[in-house]
Length: 220
Image (tube, rainbow, N blue to C red; front, side):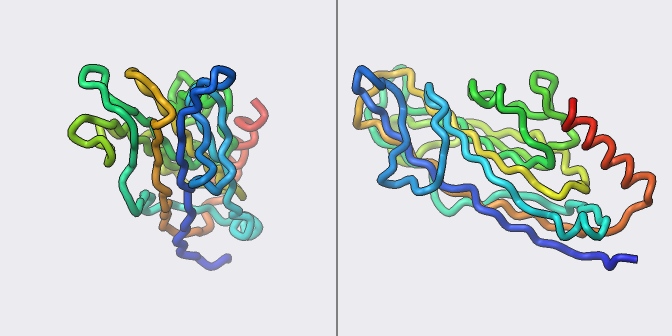
């Protein structure tokens, strides 16, 4: 019988800095490459996406299932912004969401800046979304540089996984209702994702059924 294996997974979701390009041929938010060093995708209209994978193949080769005891995020600094804040319309707003799944995430909802993964509005299966946490930060007249958290949400199942891969995504949407100028800059900090639990063998029927559901969802 395979030995139970406690685990503590750590992965970093990188920082992103955005600035407004007022050139008429662009007139949109772009990546501030002077600060951002990771390979983010600019999907247009202020929507940015980062994706990566985490290999769990060592467990699956032994027929083990990973059971999560805890999953959480840590960040080292505030969300930061620069630029004029309108007294009525406010300043920059950022929607930021981290997603961890054991199946590839549907891209069509992400392109339009929607990440309600695991809900009926998207094709993603709730059981496959192991962890997801989002934040809404706003720039105000009282906090024009260090942004204020207006809301947060989560939509992960925390269900066990027998997949050989975790799919990581971070979706950031930036917008501003007031006047936008080239002086407008926004930076979202990096996050550290930490997952603790145990990889162990489960009853064969349960294990095979878990693999079957994953196969069916991937091919649907």
